[in-house]
Image 1 (tube, rainbow, N blue to C red):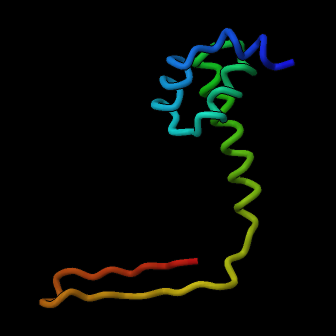
Image 2 (image 1 turned 180 degrees about the vertical axis):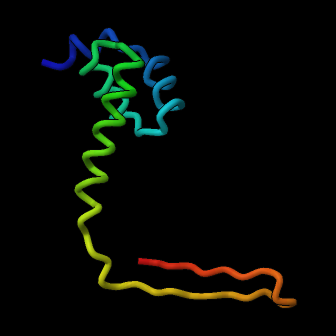
Length: 84
């Protein structure tokens, strides 16, 4: 069923949306299909979708991980890294 609607979406439009949003190719294609090829509306669609998925992940608790530190010789540069 999605083939006729997707036929109107060009690879150039998908590429342009990918460059603007940084989203994956299939996400951009789906957004353009949902928004009938309107790039601005597709950007909003991707933004809302990203916020929804970020909200799902925000509730997760990192129970495992490591925190490491590095101080460079001369004490002018230091780094703290947290890996979950």
